[in-house]
Length: 236
Figure (cartoon, rainbow, N blue to C red):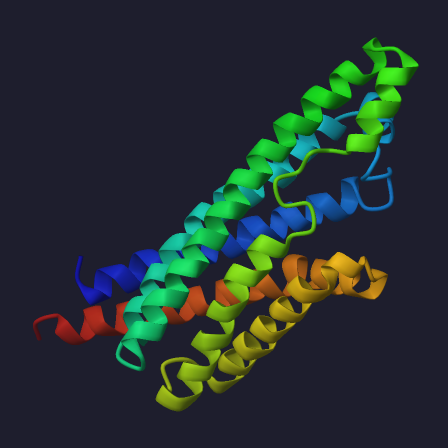
């Protein structure tokens, strides 16, 4: 695949990924925030039983994020191709981390949905002592505090922004946004273990608002570069 084709595919996938992440985030805000206790299968089971279409909306939230993450990998590969001349070793390493981070998002969202759905469906059918035990264990998420995704994606956003400032591959505002996003993701990954509520809110803003904007903006830049390269290489 040549550079122009990589940028075109990666740009389109990044734009789609940003849109899907935004849709998933909106469905999350409308259907889940403040509606139940995340640490209680009993609360989740009651919510799913009482709210029409709750399970379907949860499916949209988790599968939307999972598919978006897989699409975002193409954007990472295209950006790595664009940035490799700035620092090939660093870009290769951190883009690999980013791909791992997006794979974590895809796997955890799908696994968490079916794990929670199964536990919530079976919860009313067991006795109270077993219910208490299940509530004590929690939802069994593979990445409950989101640390894995933040600590793998944060360095990538930071590096792309930093290298783009020096090399001019991206608009300066977008480069600064990448730096800010990367630093914020790393800070969040380090302090989420303390369960400090403002940090949890910051993580939500980063994931639901900033991340989709960054994906769509970088995707547009990649797509525009591919289009310009295609026009420039066309015969007169």
